[in-house]
Amino acid sequence: QMWKIRDTEFVWGDRTYLMGVLNVTPDSFSDGGEFNTLETALQQAHKLVQAEMDMLDIGGQSARPGSKPTTLAEARDRVIPIIQAIRSSEHTALKNIPISVDTTRAEVARAALEAGADIINDISSGTYDPDIFKVVAQFDAPMMLMHLRGTPETMQQMTAYDDLMGEIITFLA
Image (cartoon, rainbow, N blue to C red; front, side, top):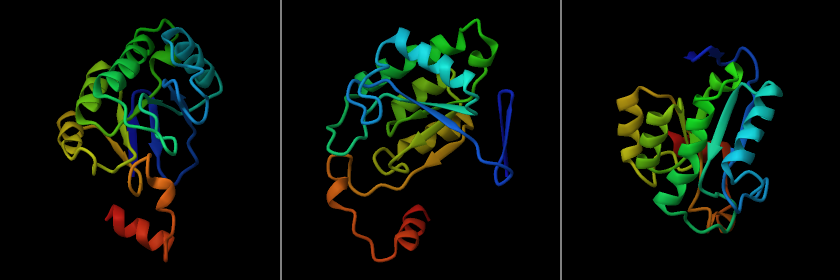
């Protein structure tokens, strides 16, 4: 299986691809809101491209354990300006980096794809907002599906599995 996205060919199984994660939230568990301004987010995106990431994943809603839901407007307003800034960049490598957007919302996915994102990365596998499937189909965009029990607010209480891989496979199927 292969994806051709912008100037990058992803031949799955051929090698390991690196995703640079850019969280543009004030409460990210990985970077604590370091990149929640347009200027700092763009600087970090440039650093990730220079570090030879194959793809840039932009997240505007926190999924840290215990986090409360982000409003639709907050999530949209966090990711769209950075996508637009990357796509209008004068740096060719930055401008052409494949962008995935970490969202569970169809409206954010639509706005992100319209702004120049290439891929949707949904931690809920479409269970939070099933209309997200219609959006990615309309744009013929790839979608990454993640496994999640509950919500980020409750997932830490739902970690017991009898058969981890079997249950994840069943969930995704």
